[in-house]
Structure formats: C-alpha cells, structure tokens
Length: 215
Image 1 (tube, rainbow, N blue to C red):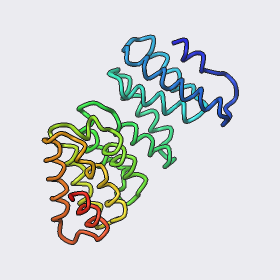
Image 2: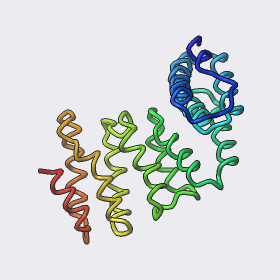
Image 3: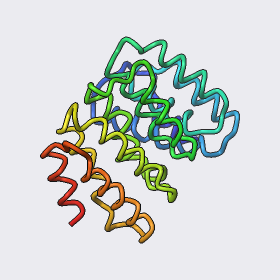
Image 4: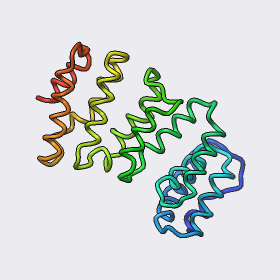
C-alpha cells in the first residue's frame, strides 16, 4: 500500500521515464493488493478507474478489477465501454483486458466476445485484441487441460484463413510451441495443428507455418 501511494502523483501527466516507471509500479502494486479481495482495495481500484487522467492508469485499474471476484466489475466494464466505444484503439484494450482474465469462465467469455457487435473478424487489430490476447498471453486458459483453448484457436484460424491468411498464419504460433508442454497437451495441440493442415483450400502462408510446426 505504501508503494502504491508512493508511486501516485497529482502532477500533470507527462511521458517521462520517471512517470512511466511510477505508473507501471503502481499498477503492479494495485494488482497485488487486489488479490486480498478487501473492500478497501476495491475502493482504491474504483477510484483510480474513475479519476485517472491517462489511459495507462485507467486500463490498469480496469484489468485489476476484471481479474477480481468483485461483482462491481461488470458495471465497470459497461461504463468503460460506453465511455470509449467510439475509439477503436481503446476498444481494442477493452476486448483484450477481458480475453486475458485468467479464470475458467474466460473460455466461454472469448466465445461471446467474438460475436459482440463491435468484433469484426476482418479487422486485424480487433482479432489480435481477442484471439491474440487469449491464445498468446492468457497461458492459464489457453493451455487448459481440456483443450478448449486449442479448439478455439483452431476454429478462429479456420474462419480467418480465407479472409486474412497473414493474420491466420501468425496466430498458429502458440500451437507451434507444443514441445514445451506435457504429453497430454502436446497431443491436443498437434491434433489441432493437423486439423488445420487438413482444411480445404488452406492458404500457402498458413500451410507453411503449420507444417513446419508439426515437424
């Protein structure tokens, strides 16, 4: 708590090494504090979310809240969406924050996010914000032992490849790391790669990456 307050400042926002470092450390401190699940910390997080004068602080608070078990997170997500829905870059962050939540329910959530009215499979940044964030950064959920994460990525590559083979081929990367995991996960990841490889009319880009990954 002392570290959090020590890194807080009422000075005007500036992009300086010191301020950047303070904001980053404050975000780390807040994420640790939120693990306590206490009302005092929730109030601190909500205050930062509402009073932030920069996106770094605002999105850090939202991420901490969304990763918590507090019921207030749903209302906070809606307020953030209503505030920033006309800014594509910020909306990408809104999608990404949700896709990176390391909780079992995120498996279902990402499947809801890709049918959200503001998700467009034809927009690379929007695809990265959901699919890339979930499969490339949310390791806990992506590598769930049921293989649902691999199945999700396989489904998305199948839909993406005819539209944007460059993006589809890049999304294969998390599956290509199968050698780093246990035997059960290896089998599931390779199964998904083989499924992609056997898709009809697979692009050269994706075929090359998948075939190399299997080798």
